[in-house]
Image (cartoon, rainbow, N blue to C red; front, top):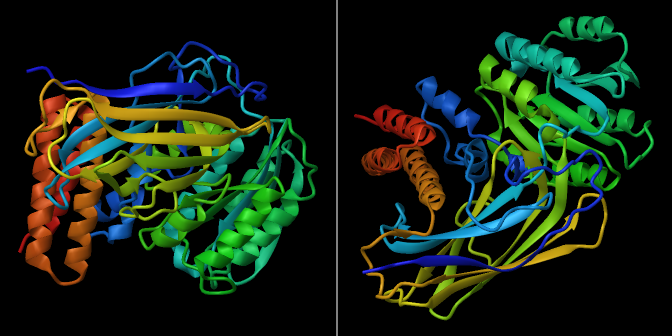
Length: 473
């Protein structure tokens, strides 16, 4: 019996010409990933410390962004390309066979010739008492690495805040690095936490620089995201950040401290032009600043709109990996505020359920996408469809993957679903149910890692196993 699942590209006209600093090269040289969370570092840190994370610490877009998830397809000869792959497999939270459609992001930007735009950076540092000695030292180390990444074409300001705000360095060209590094070294933790104060002053410093298409303006916030003075709700912060982005000033949040406000940052980092990284240790800092820095400040598309049109007999159950959208939301339209250049190929996953067996040549879903190129050209559009093209019906117990990568992506999705469910049950006091889900999740990850012989997936299986161990009686 031959089964073939086709994720067919119907139309793909994605031309992003004229992007400053983006020289195109051979297909697949670099990738792209949605903004928002870029890791699940807080969850990893808590498990390593013997703590059961909160369910919201497992962020789908964060986990996807840590992995390279390339999809096969026609060659990518533009700055941003989208492809799809499809799987039919059980979902760990329901046990039912579901359809998973992976939307993959890629780029043909040549890393050998790529150069980021000159930057106007406002470094905003939380030095409130909640930061403590170790988190504060971690922030200072990260700030030093950031200064090292800047050159004479960049400008820099530094703002610190506790329950008030102070500008240590006004926006100026990066010349006297010793002065900047000395200012960083003198920071100590004390006082309350007025994140709003720091943001407003940081954006004020950036606003002293003119809007220039050839340059980028970005506020970089280092914090444990535990505000207790001024604005404290996600709505207030999102309004401030989105308003600043509309004026050409974007935001990157760097999280520190095990007592970190993951839910708040997950929401606010979903605004246009924003992303977020958790700095769990020196190794993570080195990777972010030495390997990823030029990419994390380089958006390549804005306002990616996704419209799902399920075929007859199917309905959308959930979409995963959309920044700011909780896993489980079943809306057929979704928006990704920003797509960034990346070393890895990112993903969004749509999950659909159907009635009865999947039949040969049965359509599954049509996906329509549109987005705004970063340099302001006319919006681009693409349509992608997926259908099952087997010679016989696919039974309710069978699994099928159109590509190797989508199998891994489904395993990662099931990891998020299982971990979130187990952690939620654990913190509600449903310990036995939590253990059962955690053990099942760990077993699934181990089996898929071995089946695919995938080292990064084995790392996730180890994390799932450690989470299950924490839930033992």
